[in-house]
Length: 141
Image 1: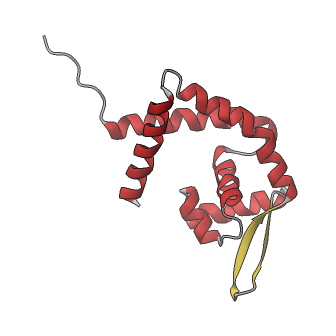
Image 2 (image 1 turned 120 degrees about the vertical axis):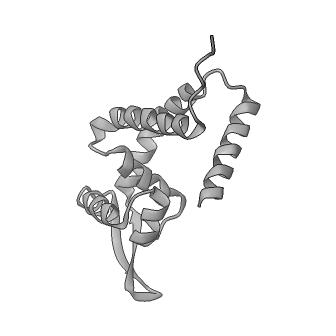
Image 3 (image 1 turned 45 degrees about the vertical axis):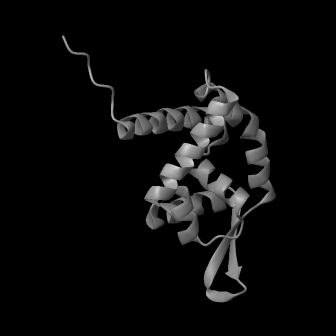
């Protein structure tokens, strides 16, 4: 009798993504912010002043989806859009104080979720896992 083959790596990665997104959506529900919106806010936290197209690429959504997402975040006063001083045709998106406050409020809970996901990993394995995931992302980018 042969054993069942393990799932492909792509399947496993997608399952982890779906599970973390569902858990993140649940965690963020009281804020009224979705996991995708939260991701965009964290991208801006690392690199403020991006265009909508740059934010879309870095948040893994289409430009059309980003347009809707940006509008929703702007209405909630979590971000602002302003003309880019270097290019009149381009607007840059920045976090507001409310956006920074929301991120700071949820950071501990998001860290606990990440820690839960890595339960059973040693510190060395956590570092290696992060390195491998980033290398895989870069290879496909």
